[in-house]
Length: 632
Ligand SMILES: [Cu+2]
Image 1 (cartoon, rainbow, N blue to C red):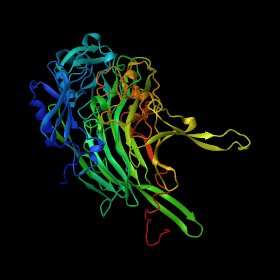
Image 2 (image 1 turned 135 degrees about the vertical axis):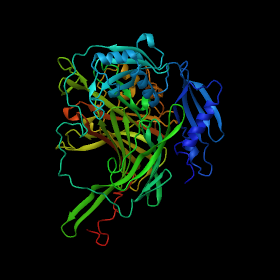
Image 3 (image 1 turned 120 degrees about the vertical axis):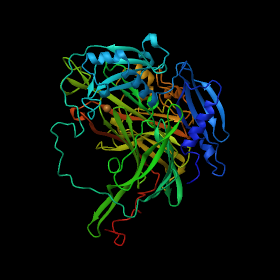
Image 4 (image 1 turned 180 degrees about the vertical axis):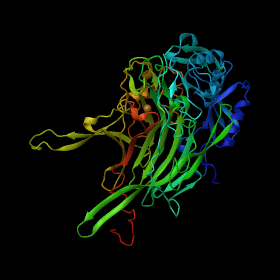
């Protein structure tokens, strides 16, 4: 075992020790719950001297179920003491916890009023019922329940124990619950009319008349000599790339201290890459859906929703797994086995030319893939960070799982697509905010908007074909708020003006704005007020260790986005300094019949690519198929 590195996630022992320190505080009783116990990451400067590692600290959010009083604090694991323990601000609520999801399910299925409502609809076997609890935005909470730890739920019914749990929404039936009192506050019960007859099954055993294809031959991926990467603790090295892997309850996988070894020099590319928020508003104002906006990271936590990966299904080939250590709401640690998958893939041709004299020169591309999968109730998000031999970095997200669908009585609402008999799937969007703390050859970076600029026809351009590139230096946070511009093919270059490449130009990486989606929503709507971050493709801030959550630290039951719009209102300088890019991308999910009853992956990605970081193609040294014959 290698010693703990300052960026390693908390171990089970550390989580237990952190919880014990808080529980020993006066007034912290059995009625307390913990939403998060996470590494308080050291400042960048504190990492510079490996001889003197910074103290291990944990950040904890907990609350008292008795009165709802919530606190946040920091404990020193090195000194074994509580450093701070302060109340949250009014209106701030700790995120939802998986334990509450399960506890309220147990309450609801034994609640006489709920059982009676289900019986009225012909549902008598409670084992076939799923209570799916969602968080609220504060503005949509009924006045009489304001200030409570309140949530609402859908009720779903499966046809048999093996059947799709999300096939049949019991439309119109929505418990409203208090998660501190763990009680039903009221039951919305509207008559949706008779349920439609549908085929909502995806598992072979329950899909009627399904014949599996018989022309799929075996496909094996083997690496008899093992993979070309090494993993030492959380330090991952592959060819010229190196990085440290982190993991936490909220973001899931984190890529730390990413560097590329260039001619025996370790050149930093990024200090930290992660997903900081995900906002999923359903764009359907009908009674079953108007509250349905999920903050899958801020309310629920991608880390807490991370599931174990299975060899041969989730990952194919020579796989190395890393476990993740998380905790429950009582502060007890537990391990998610095989939470992170590391492997390398063949990815087709890297470069090629066929010469009349020397023949073909072809190099095959390899990529290193670090991935994790999160199941957020009905939906799955599969996240892949990919590192390429030519310095490219790709971040891909695959959305799959089970859509929210709803029966209708007569006339499909225009806010979705009909996907089965009298059943529609509401339109919705998945906005993901990636937090990209790039440090291109050091911290002093500047972001430039780069646009294709066609030159008007004139004496110097008589045929009207000239094209130039326009670079706009983004000097302050207000200038750093950027939108994608298809007409100008806008990208963003992160340049280090203090380091020149061999051509005399500043070294850099660019962010290619693929998968950017516009908000397409009234800026005054309650959803946007909670998630102003989704209104733009890119935000740029100067690095601040405490600025982590673009829609605010506590989106659960929030009114306003207290993250990016508040920080950037100061309009700080972002020139020649340590910048953080916040990239908003995702899926504008106009639902399809083909997404039913289980959705084939919908794939989106964005790229970070070197621009002048190298002087020429850095992958000339990738060996060919047969090194004895260099042109083969
Ligand atoms: Cu979707």
